[in-house]
Image 1 (spheres, rainbow, N blue to C red):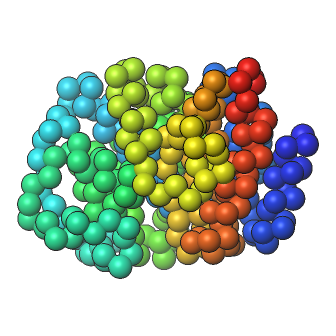
Image 2 (cartoon, rainbow, N blue to C red):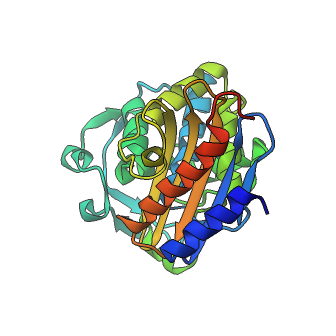
Length: 277
């Protein structure tokens, strides 16, 4: 165990976290930090990165247009038994789409809302269009393990049946690295995805532990006692690196983001300096 990994363990213990997993390292190089990196966690909203990858790959291949309109709805079918369920505004972090049911919204706008505001409505509309098996297959085809996309979000019957989207810190780090190095899709698509991820509006986790000048392309996710953040970090004058922090057992509105910010601060001291490798 490295000194940094020991320090992360100390931060997790001090916070009282039940579980913490971390994967970090420069883009294009072996991971420098691995703490419980292969342990699976409920994905929460971090799986939306995989949906974004599938959408942009299909758009660049000419299979779909990002300007194609999609009718907004909030009712979906459960993976578990096909029963209907309806998304609840109270469980979402984006509210505008609930007032636009029946209207057409371009795929491009849905993708942005899925990432920057973590819209559950946008996510499920995209998954219905793209297909969860196809999204999952693309992730595996990229050689990324540890990221499993089975269904849309807020599917209560599937959750009760144990049919959940899951991630590992190592898997999310690998997926983000493929976006950062341009291997997840054609370069133009990867740059567009990074732009969307960098517009993330929930910045209380990884970005809060970094210098303001650092560009952070990331996706958060939280549910019950889970809080995650997965990022590509572009430090000023330094080499880009990936950082994924998954947490369980803390208040996802305060203690967990504070722990993630603390881990980000510790990692940045080692990976974010000019000339670091």
